[in-house]
Figure 1 (cartoon, one colour):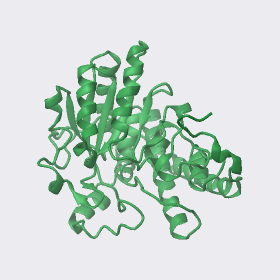
Figure 2: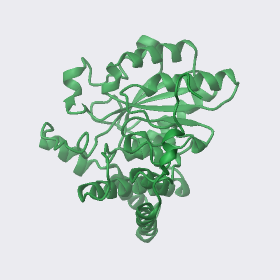
Figure 3: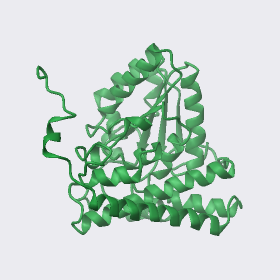
Figure 4: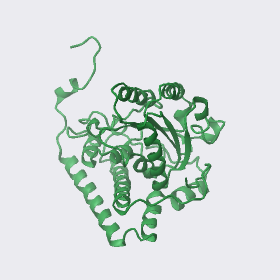
Length: 339
């Protein structure tokens, strides 16, 4: 495990995967970064409707955790789902259409930024209720176990969600029934604009609570995609073998505010400098690929240009795509006692 701020890791460097996988992970991280950047400017320019809760800066968490999963493995996200969804295989075209409220969106234009997903690739529709996805993930894992499948589900949540009752109930059930679920706390130090130091007695709210439920846990540098992937590999292997859940607390940082109106005035400047300038996950992984001679500058540049072209094409497609038909408002909904 690599050393991480506030964590318990040692100084060992995480291992670089084989070239094909390493470049694949970088491409996906870069794609997520560029998607989020484009969404930000489209929103600021008034071109895109709705609201945004962005995951810029947390790309290594999503890609490291989900890169090796199959389509039959599931992922449960939060109100900040874009990085998770793209990492799991939801196309940027489908994501962009959803952001524009179009029929070709991954949720047919009905979900918006906080409710994206595509079950066809194992990405459950995101849940905007803080901690709301934790028991859902336990339920999916229970279904896998009852059906005698070796599939797993990765469930993301924030440090703030660790204070919800759903966290404790889900951990208890997952541990007692040895469910194949990996609970991933993306500890970005703040629940909305409130520091974890104010709301919790520990800087490691998920990790330190794990012993109460007899669940193995690790603290990982969430901005080191290789370290995250190594931890994911261990946790996924345990789950597939029927050994139950794992809690991973990933130390990370969102570059932007909690949502569209958050100017981040509550964050210390030296803290922002460390995380955003000195510990940027995309920048660090790019430099490491070059320094360890995994890839040449031209190879990386080609991946980046391809990702940027994919984003450009997705925006153009989404702007021209049709809106849902009015009668579609009555489909894909549940009405108790209705037809």
